[in-house]
Length: 216
Image (cartoon, rainbow, N blue to C red):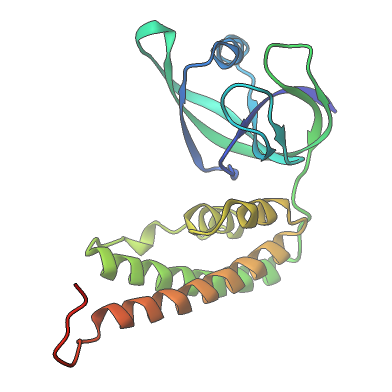
């Protein structure tokens, strides 16, 4: 168990996924400066109660560490920050001694399953991700190179969770799943649901309007 500086945000960060932030509060400029100096990560956790700016916010207890990869210094000491998610953690205790929130945390790795099961579920999930991206590409007329999808089951799962357009509490539920095979299975269910909804919406949009009236 170790103490980790925490950044409660209205976002859910997954391992391996990018994070971009605009830092303007003094407490977080201090936190980021200390992380840069030490080379240590900070923790990102979805806000359960409270706001990002101003008073302290209470985060969910499962989050993801983030390592800083780039910092751009702006006027008045403001920062544009790029970081990447590294590993899940679980908060056991919140601490308020610093200007920013910290927590006593421990790593929270996914419980693994047999490689054959993970690969099978990853193949099934990949097929649904490809259908999802095909629909989005058709709707936006923006092609997507599906060869960019990773073949490693966990990397695919976290990218899938990152791409999925669902409410934040549902993304938090994905982050909190304990087993790798369960995460892949739940993502398959989510993608199948989203593909069905998107197909229905796209079909309605493309259907011709019959009759003397137009939807003005």
